[in-house]
Length: 309
Image 1: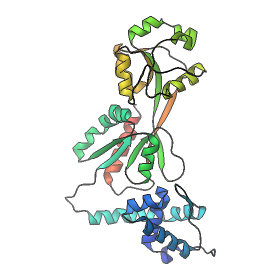
Image 2: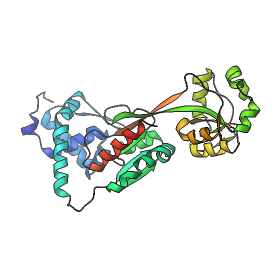
Image 3: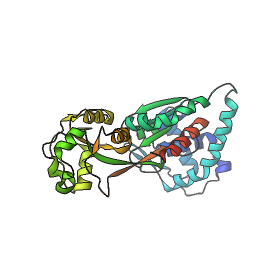
Image 4: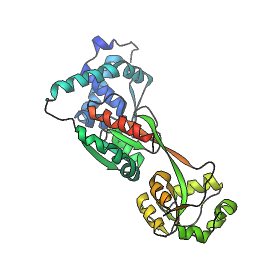
């Protein structure tokens, strides 16, 4: 291909640029097609046409999508703001005055959504905001966000790459807890003086068989590897909380999830380390302004509420 610099304003078709921006943001031809209502072959044809017009390669094809070249990144920086502004104008013109905005699709961990996000978002229904909530694991939800299934995702890890944007939402602190009967049986201050040896033989309630949260706590706080098997596994931390309150054993839980139980004494912290494990949650979306004004309302409400979580 020859190497000539494009004059975006006069040489390139707006529909090609719109498709290009969707591919750049979603990371795949298939996902871009879903966002735009186009077939994957149509997207592929349009991107080949655009590359021929520019004389430059825009995307490296990979088994699980595409990776933008530096030329594509530069072009996206040129066209993103104008195309987003044009899309907003077109949407206002096409939407009737009495037609409400579409529902806002929000996804994230079930426990955080139910315990914190939904109570924070509930007042928005008085402004006509409609919500569609989905739960799941972060990796799967981020793929759905790239593909246009969601507007906002609360992620437990910062997404890599440039197809998504994210901002810190909240920090969750993890705490080692037990019901009062188990805490008394283990003995006051024993965990602080003896470490994990004080917990030998105590049933462990956890999220999954590989003890993910508890393993991290053991490694971070005790500097040792957690071994053994769980007495109970529940793929929902609210279930873990209920089992521990009922006296099933010990667990490691996010503090936000068990604040009430700690305050009432239904749960007792077995240790108060100076440097507890903390995990940052991120509010994630596709780059560019959404053509749905309610997405911005939901985003700002979550960011405001997240400061108190």
